[in-house]
Length: 102
Image 1 (cartoon, rainbow, N blue to C red):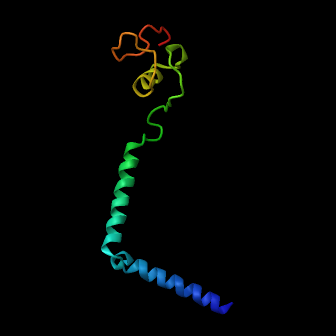
Image 2: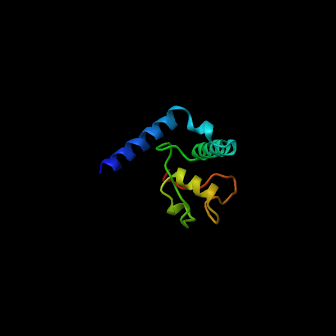
Image 3: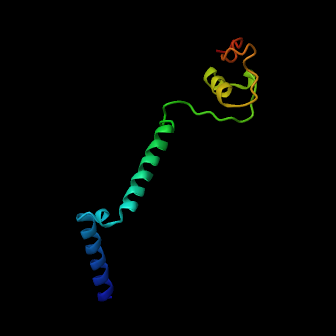
């Protein structure tokens, strides 16, 4: 049991030394470059995602008509992002113009 505790303390001390003296500097340059590239890709993808609470989220689920929409924003989303919608009779990019609900 004493040996196990000794080895655990030794491993912890080595890990702290690695962190303190910049273990990344000891890695091959290609590994450091790959780490930076992955970080950049993750940051770019995070920027593309909608921010939490910034807008209501919709998804294409097969609805096509104005009568199936709950809001103008939802209708606009469906018109721009979902194929086969039937909400813009005059093809001017404005969905559900004659819908009196909004």
